Every structure is written in structure tokens, then in C-alpha cells.
Picture 1 (spheres, chains in turn blue, purple, cyan):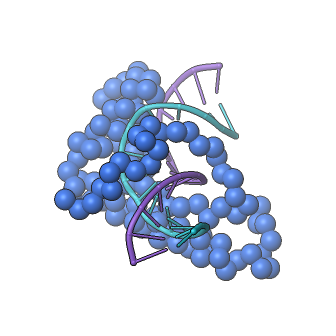
Picture 2 (cartoon, rainbow, N blue to C red):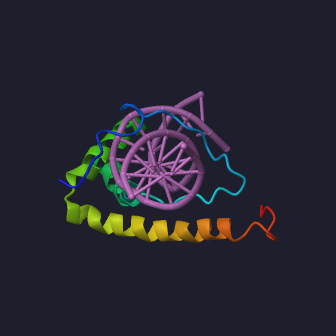
Picture 3 (cartoon, rainbow, N blue to C red):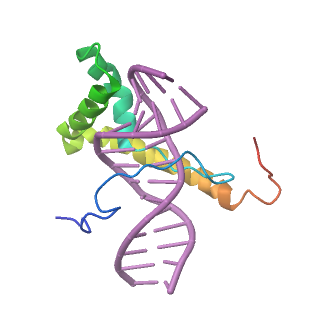
Length: 104
DNA sequence: GGCCTGATTGTTCAT
DNA sequence: ATGAACAATCAGGCC
């Protein structure tokens, strides 16, 4: 077993956070789930017509793990690629900031 | 040097 | 526009 570091995070319950907070928050990359959801959202909703977000969200989640490592692989791949994308933001976040004033 | 935490990402749905 | 379950993430700050 790799290493799990005993349930880290806040005791085990997902707390809620807010949206954005930094001036030019470099924002991280998306997560495998994000890409997976992008593809499954159509399939899930297609197989469960008329279900509410509660169902879709949950089903989406359990289905996600239902996949095998290789199945999520393509998603993780994107996640990794997306993370790289974030690398760019954080890079600009480190570099940019001298002349580049707030962009938008 | 190793550890944690927080922030963030996107879907759906409603209000 | 935003939040909330669903899941991953993972980078940076900290002593």
C-alpha cells in the first residue's frame, strides 16, 4: 500500500469553503473527477432521466470509483495535463505581479 | 525534512 | 451567481 497518512483533512467531514479569495489566485488545475464528470454527466443523466442533482451527483461519484485504475487513467491524464496548466498560472503568479497589474 | 491545510475544479439542480 | 454532495488534487506555507 502506498501511503494514506491516516485520513487527513478535517477529521473526515467535508467542510464548505467559499469562492475565490486571492487577488490573482493562480487557481490549481482541474481534477480527474472534473474530466470524468464532463463525459459521464451525459451518460449518467441519459440513463437517469429526470433525476435531481442529488442523484446525479452521487451516482456520478460512485460510478467514478466504479471504474478501474486504467479507466480513470485517461481522466487522471487530463487532470495531470490540467495541473500543468495551473503550473502556468502559478508561474505567472510568481513572475507576473511587477508590471502586470490586475488583469481584469 | 516532513506535515498539514486550505483553496480550487466541474457537474447537476434549484432558488 | 451561488451553493451543496461527489471526488481528486496537490502546491504552497510552516517550524
